[in-house]
Image (tube, rainbow, N blue to C red):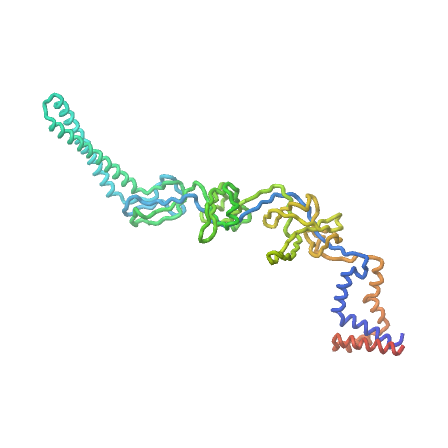
Length: 453
């Protein structure tokens, strides 16, 4: 080998090391796509698989609603006067008949005493007049008095009787007013509002307290027509407070509006709670999950394992373009071959989908690494810590060795006789050249080498 030939070989080595990164990576990609130069060998993709199992799944309707008591009772005073004492405050739990407030009662007590006195007078009058009427009746039978005298005695007796009934009614009203000076709770519940204080004037037309009846809780949700239509009375419901991960209450659909709201287009559904947790109280916002269809033993796959295929279909009759979507999974056959299976899907719940056809329990489906796989492609199953990411490897073969020997190692050996000083000079010479200049210089050196030989 002459000196000129050695110089050309060294220059080729430098071009490979310094200026052909883009071409080398492109060539490497093309080399990898065709199996590393061995067209008889295939690619192996590292994947992770999961067994197909039967699981419970449900079609659900989700919405949000605020918990409230089934009944909220407004406690309104029946008499008007100054409030002298408050016994119950906001948030207190009260029993039925418990005194909540006291209204000034001196006036009502005087009215009660007056009514009692009038009733006593009426009793005396009716006793006197009834005795006189009985005597006059006997005299009339013996023709000792006239009919007119009898009629007068009867009228007096009837008047006394009426006055007695009126006095009795007045006493009842006075007693009721006096009793109402003690404002009492009509139900067992929790005080959710108090609208007066000591010294205020209690008004017979304004609620002094609002009490949430503790007979039960409910929530109301408003659903779009497609969800409202499928909700039925009696369907089970799970409720979850937004700050918690798990359901904190359960209930049933108890009532449903027969029509949609004309303004919002939403339908009202009432859910009655049957079991509650410690975080359920009036006013808390919850997510409601209504189970429409329950399937306890369905074949279920994860949405992330699906391979979606979208095709554009032109309808010549309507002159419209539609998208035809199909879903498939890759099934591991013998842990070495990926088989593409088209699926018939049913209901869905979050990330889970029901498979109606295309899979059997126990089959292994590819859950990671399916992107880029083809039907019949070679795979290597890995899981857990041994699985890093989908990688592609070239199958080794004996015919691959010559390709490796013709790589950078051979080029390095071609310039192995050159001194370090000559290599440094060549690198310095090449530093300011671009890719085109390097290639042009390489061609000229090769032509000069051919002419000299």
